[in-house]
Image 1: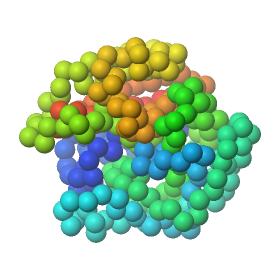
Image 2: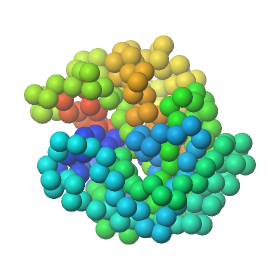
Image 3: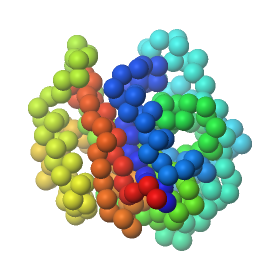
Image 4: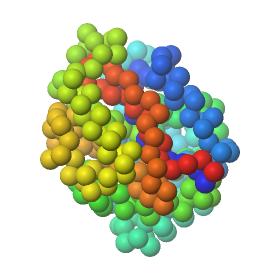
Length: 264
């Protein structure tokens, strides 16, 4: 049984950096019970109304950002797809009553490859990319993740890539030492207590219950938060959650890694 993971992708610069957070991402593969057969991955940067499931022979690398060093634009992460796992993913979602569309043209955005190149740098594990829908309720997002839980029994690793505190309006570009705004820390502490206690009902009401939720997860930016909900739902059968890492950049950009379920 594979655990599922939420991994914040932060700023694109993480792709070429060596720091405490990138080192923590490198450790994820060592926590797995065996080499994954494939990776099913939700990215905050692929938003769609219907649930999209990507399938290609080899995915192109999308450089969906601007103003960064040329080195970033030269990175390639040529992961292959897995048609069988993509088909199984589609069927599980349809069986759960989730509208699904198969996409055969979209590559991997930086929400995918910034994370994956640290966990599996050789791009040698097939990937099935999935979209997110921030317009759904937390309960609906959780149920989509829950529908995919059987994949974990087939050695499929489910990852959500986004950010639990992600608000460009409060970013302080001068803050590069890892210090965080107090409100950001308070939100992360509330989230830690809620997820560790598997308080799904509280999570569904995080906008009214969590301190400073409007700053941590702005209404226009909830797409970065929702990958956490999908992968939590994928471990509903076990209901165990562990925060493996937390650090910050620019005061209001959190780098968190959450593991849901146990490695067996």
